[in-house]
Length: 112
Length: 111
Image (cartoon, rainbow over the protein chains, first blue to last red):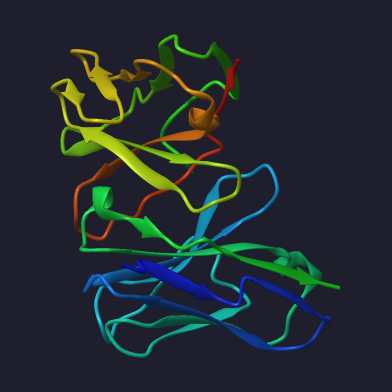
């Protein structure tokens, strides 16, 4: 039972480079989410997808794009990375209720 | 913004009960209280949730005051592995409202 799998686990980018963070879940969950967590801070919602084929902005969407490729996969893209995007990124999924959130182990991204 | 207020840190002795408070004075009638925890930069983990009745599961107990303006998460016999950041969140179940994580309470369980 893998749950929520995020790749890569670590990444260093140069300012201006682009990359895509991958997330996949094997629990047949409808909803998927991307959060970021800065040092000493709580998690902030970037984007979410309530169901396959839909995506919506969260609290801090600027500088990011997402794709809900299918029910299993939800990717986060940084088109032109900036140092302010240095953070830990968590993907989560749920059946649609709040007590069913399952989080991945995170992607630690550094932009230099 | 988070709708809850939690102390930034707490300490507890191993084997003793850990009582983590949370204020949510503006909670609406259809909003639940959820607790998650995050152990050392791992992804958050669901603990428990409740609407107005006290709840208990294998991990913890949740006590909600009668006016629902505050609650307490109780870890009955804290272990070193319970050292984590604990988040108290209020949200309506389902629907379009998403979980908003504040800064939580850093619980340190001491040997």
